[in-house]
Length: 143
Image (cartoon, rainbow, N blue to C red):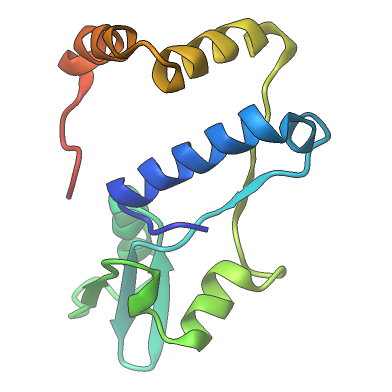
């Protein structure tokens, strides 16, 4: 479980890399999941819903609230900003939470291994080239 922002995604990628390198059977046997925390809290009157991202926020505003409602939108800067009840109900309660299973298909195993070695290996020039090759796709990295 990590924050719903770019920093949280970075931490999640580092954690997945650790499990891939040090405890790969956890992934291969289907035991690694990412808990998806909400990014927004939407409130109008007594009704509160949680959105995972910008698109989900807009969908919920249209679907869950009256057309002209003044919806209060709060953005979580991290899991530490949520009160214990919110964290439990949105990210930890098995009946309500969203989990993403970390899986590597047989067809992708070689490419994943190569990418992990490029990004986490001992050759910084490979990391640098990897980042340079993909920098054009990097936009809106933080909201």
